[in-house]
Each structure stands twice: as structure tokens, then as C-alpha cells.
Amino acid sequence: MTPVELRKKIVSEAVSWALDTLKLTQTEIGVALKADERTVRRWAAKEVSPKGHHREKLEKLDDLRHLLSEVFQTQAEANQWLYSRVPALYGRTPISQIRRGQIEEVIAALATIESGAFL
Image (cartoon, rainbow, N blue to C red; front, side, top):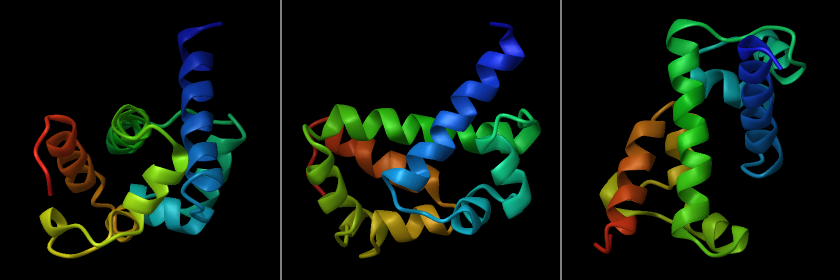
């Protein structure tokens, strides 16, 4: 598998995870990653590889996926946290922040939990 094919596979998996696990629509993923819905569809279909800031945002989405699996033992626990108000996010839910493109804030809140601090 070439590096480009591998990148397309990783991106497709990240988009599929956001669709299936986070229950985001392609439009919501596009808003979160600052991309149009057509581009998100093309990533999911492994037609194109993201460039520039899209690649960085997708890497953050993949970081979020891995951190959630590290912090929570089950997907049910992760989902409960994603849909609960979190003080470190000024009382917003992590999923709402993800939808707004604030993935880095959610990662920071998760990193705090992983470090042993409570939010």
C-alpha cells in the first residue's frame, strides 16, 4: 500500500467513525472540519486525500477517536461523556463543540481526564 493509499484509508476510517460512532452527518463533519459535504463524501469513498488544514483537522479527529478509547472503557461511557455538559468546556457538551469545529478543546478536556484530573 502506498503512502497516499494509506492516508486515504486512515481518512476514510476517521470519517466512518464520525458517521457511525459520533452519529454526525456528512454536513456536520464538513462544518467541523471546515470542508464542504462533497469533499467529505470523497474522503469517505477514498477518492481523494486531504491537504493542508483539512489534513490537520482530520488528524485531530483521529486523535480524538484514539483518546476516547484510552480514557473510557466502553463506547457507552464515551457517549455518555460526549453528550454531557462538561465544566471545562464552559458547560457545553463535547459533541456540540465537535460539531462547531472545536475538536482541540475536546481533546484538551479529555487529556485532562486522562492525566487524572477531574472536570
